[in-house]
Image (cartoon, rainbow, N blue to C red; front, side):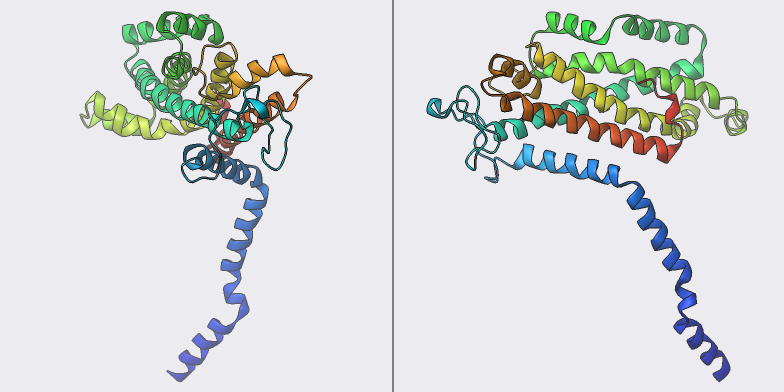
Length: 303
């Protein structure tokens, strides 16, 4: 008995016994170093979201709507980190607040387009036949138009504003999820586990939702990151053309459009919104790239 106690104590005190745990931590650290780009992207988006939605209420950023004509087009300073615009409004506050539009657009578009596109692709891929033909022809009609032109046409009918711009971006984003889900279902529905469920008398709805969907969701998660990137860019393009959020609500695209008139007099007016838009797009793209590496099926992405 004493020999077993001594042996157990020796193993516990032996540095080699901690080697598996040490190696595991080293692998995690190595993976974190290799994935620093994703960590930085998540940190940037979380910081931007926190400042954009709570910064003004907490007093971290000044009022983005407060005007001061005497301070118009002032350069970056201790009082105004990004300078001021043509009405003397603080550009730092407006750039940060403009992040609400981009983040909200990305979130709403991804959720809404996935909620529409995934069921359509699931039905088209599993049921085939006439349902597949009808759904995919509608998707092909949407894809036949350039995204920006289709969004402009929808905004012409629906009117200007953040809500209608989000609807337009959602409509042009649905085909990405629908076609990707259909392709995944077509490659999975003839596998043994699906045939086994069918032979056991499972209903089509149960097979689609309980069997196929969990095994086809990986490429859809990858697609979500790239759809978010696409949504931010398209919303900024619509705002640049004056069809996005209505002034005085700050939007990066609208600020870039307005800054054209002050390009030489106040170059900072367009530089800082442009940097914010670029970093946000890169951050969303990094999340999509990380999902692609994680799930290993991102090569099916349509964007």
